[in-house]
Length: 109
Image (cartoon, helix red, strand yellow):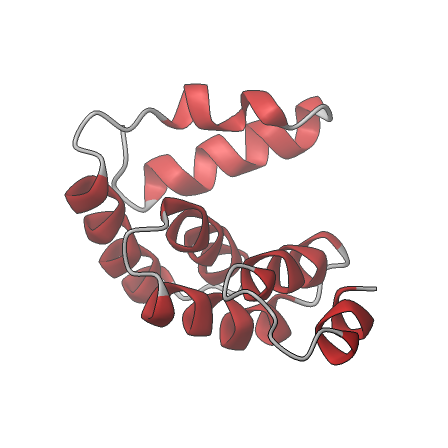
């Protein structure tokens, strides 16, 4: 659906890339999530959403070094970031638990 939205909009917003990446994450296509999430973080460097979800995708793919680099960006954007607060938007407790675990393992509080 996001690809279609981007195709139909002659001037898609940069944040569309973030939600395309998120769609890949939630369909467990983590490797495919890197490109749109990276594009989003390059175009909107202070949009924390892209960095947090890149961490999750990197950790799911076993790429901890890249996840740690993104964690530094998250803390640059928001030094008071809290993994527990971030995941409140997700309804599935299993997803919340996995997300917090990945974020903390990458170096976030």
